Structures are given as C-alpha cells and as structure tokens.
Length: 364
Ligand code: F6R
Image (cartoon, rainbow, N blue to C red; front, top):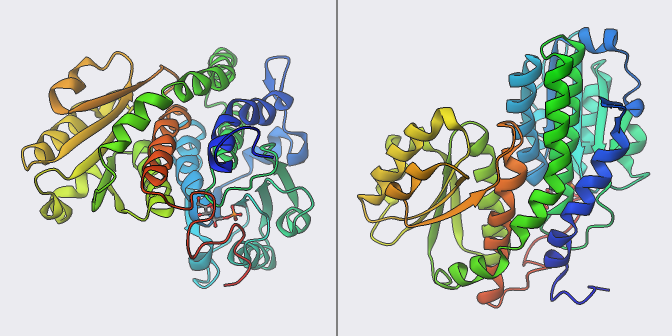
C-alpha cells in the first residue's frame, strides 16, 4: 500500500506533483480561473470587504501564506486565526465578510466549531477541504476541494501543498474580478501556476543531497527557521514539519524579530534555515544571516535561482526554480519537507505516526 516507499510521508511527498495538478487543472478553463463551486459571481466577489481565514496547524500556515497572496494581489484585507483562538474571541463579522475554513480532514473539532460560530454570526463560509463529505464540507456554504487524495501520514505534505494552490486560485480570481490585475497579468500567473507540478517534481529529485545534509544534523538540539513576508509563513511550516516528525526543538521567526530576543539562543554550530525567495527582501535577509553566522550559526539557505549574493552569507544553499513571487512557498516547502523527513528517518523516529499526535484532531 506504500507503493514501494518506506513511509507514507515519503510516498505522499512524491504524490505532490499529481495532487497539485489535480487541484489546479479542473479550475483552469480557456485561460480563465473557474471555481464554480464557489457559487459567486464577479459582482459577489467585489462585495467582499474582508476575509477571515481560520484553521489549525499546517492548514493555519497555509492560511498565513494565503493572507500575503490575497492581500498582495487582490487588495482585500485578510485576517488569519487559529480556530481554537477564533472561536473564543467573539470575532467581528460584518456584512461583506467571507470566512474561509481550511482543513484536510474536515473533522478538526476547533475548525468545525469556528465554522459554526462564523455562520451563526451571519458570515458566508467557504471550506477548503480534502476529505469529501466530511463535516466541514457538509456544513460550509460552499466547498472547494483539494484533490490530494487520501493522506495517511500524520504529518501533512500533499494536502498542505494543495491548500496553497486553492488559495492562489482564489487570489488570482478575486484580483481579476476586482480589476487589480489585467487579463495579460492573469494569463502570466496561470502559466506560472501550471509550471508548479514540474518544478515540484524537479525539487523532489534533490532527495539524496538533502538526505546527506540531514544526516549531519541528526543530533541537533535546536533549529531555527527564519524568513520575511511570505517566507516567514513557509518557515513556520518547515519548522512544524521538522519538530513533529523528528522531535527536535525548532522555531520559526520573522527574521527582523531575531534581534529582539531570539538571537541570544544562537550558539556555535546552531542550525539556522533561512528562506529568502522575495527579491525585494534579499538584502534584509542576508544581513540577518550574517548576524547569526557571526555568532557561530551554520546557515542553510533556500532561495531562488539567480540569487548569487546568498553564497556569501550561507554555508549550504538549496535553489528553487523561478516562479511568480506569490507562488514561491509551493517550491520552498519541498526541500524543507524532505529535510524534516530525513532527519526523522535518521533518528529512527516513527515517521508516519509521531508520538502524541493523531491524524484528525476531533477533540478540543
Ligand atoms: C501537521 C498537521 C496538523 C494539521 C492540523 C489540522 O503536519 O498535519 O497540524 O494540519 O491538525 O488538521 P486538518 O487540516 O485536518 O484540519
């Protein structure tokens, strides 16, 4: 059933190109983005004043990426909450608020409760869900499925990747409906989206190189992930992947926050994974990398091809192919997933079923 792979997590990482293509292609028709299940006309979209994205864990991280993409492209204000916080904070839901609940299982107790809270307050609720017919899918006003197929490993990989794709599709569609991008710009964005499956495939080919690198860090005590903007969101997901399967303590920080406290934790040999895919932030990131390196950190960089400056501030570089600045998270996450996986394998952890975790959290 693992199709020759040692673990479901590995198998599911390798299924990502197909899962992404399956989530994407039915929604691209004649050079346009069609999300029929949304049940919204362009006029309805233009009436959206605010979006609240609500989810848990990795789905919450996908939501954080969604915020940067939606705000950047469509200029609609987005708030992102963890479901366990949203449901108890008496959130302000006004006319024109769209609530988006993201969930692989569709059964997460806090996410379902947040959905009910939002509906009760009069919001229109869109579910981004993987499991067909699940509770969240049934109770949401509309549901956009991620077509990742069954996900068995406790640590999500392919469902998360498809959640990002669903959010990009919404952002491009909303941006066009609101006139924030032209038809030509939309066509370019769609071309970039279509390239993602092959680019992910290519990055998965780095497997051996990443395994070798991971084997040097099996005894790490702490790992820090740093990034800015959208790369901060992916740092959070990279950090979660590592800690949940390998039991190594890791944290993600917005790189600019380091010097407000966290940098005191950096010592000789501490591993810092720096994600820098946003050209306008390269310089700022490089100066943060120099700061941690001068305190003894070993710096692993994940950046876009063409960023040659990075070598002067890092010890090891993984390049991702070029894509639109809003889509880089889909590529940067691949080496980070592989890194977490191989560290866990090297440490002899139960990769598919990490201690204390359940695939679907149906208790609060
Ligand atoms: C991490 C992970 C969890 C889930 C979270 C939400 O790898 O899998 O953090 O993302 O429990 O689960 P769903 O998406 O089923 O609501």
